[in-house]
Image (cartoon, rainbow, N blue to C red):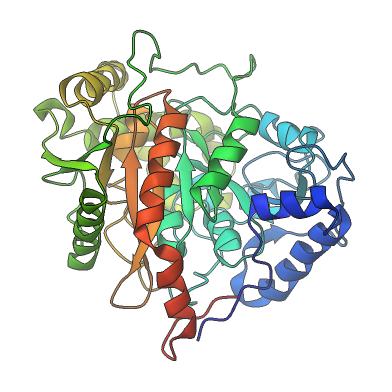
Length: 455
């Protein structure tokens, strides 16, 4: 049966408690550290925890003072190892923070530990289990970050997404996962997998916390050489809240077919939104947008082979079979095919933007974040095909927990917005979240004698 997490305060709960003096920064961080250590023997969310918490004793007025934060082991943290879940990088300890981590520390946040990633953010998993049921995957590649928030250890964790590595694990673990517009959070100090696709994203307990954190960490860095392929010029600002929210539902999902329970959960949510005043319309993507899978796969394989190919050549025994296969695949893609895929990425990103905002006048697109509940076993982190198209386009995406499936595991709903209108998507998502009634669903699961385990 589910029990209350050992550490269940939201980000904004912590901020209010610290600013009012109810909670000290030291107490907040020590509570998270204790929760992490208690859960680690079965959850395995962390690849590194310091011997004792290194507390950022910041001014209590700073926006993240007292907030414990977990960072994916793909993102550099000074004073903590960053090893990419690879024996080739065992013992690697960067001397400087990634830009993201520096911004978090400057805002008063404390990094409590590094979370498990699949090797190089690809498909070779680590030991992390799903907090709802240890026999199921938490998803990948940001496995530990999703699990740490789901288990109530930290209220904020960061990961990366190249296909579906934030959205899918968030859906599997029953938390909010937010992947903003491509390039809107600087990736300096983050190991790339495919730079034309890599995004930084975050995990929180609710949408408002994600919006709060996004304002703190967003912004470009002149050392992040990969500029966005999407443009904010000449765009409508979308719904300002004074008009009826207009949400589109795809007649057919882009990617693998979803399970009946996932389809039913989305239909239920759409009915709730419509009953509460939203305009929900069934839509079809333009034909040229329906087959993005081959394009995104070509870009990923080629760029991953460039980034990681030298390691394979130098030390083939230190790299997994799945990563080896990806590199070999990338080396087999012609330069012409890669150039065509990159050109299509730019063209289709602009095509989607025009379709979403000008032709359909949608505030968001409602789609599945995954095929259904988290699969059984830890060797397979799940199908990313329902997330990869939106990563390819570079548009913001957010998933919200909305229901429990037949195995008692979370099901999510993914909302897609217009590029560089992240704050608008977050506002729509917060409105949707209020109607999804997840807290009531979660409470019922906690009190059910057959409910799944949580930390």
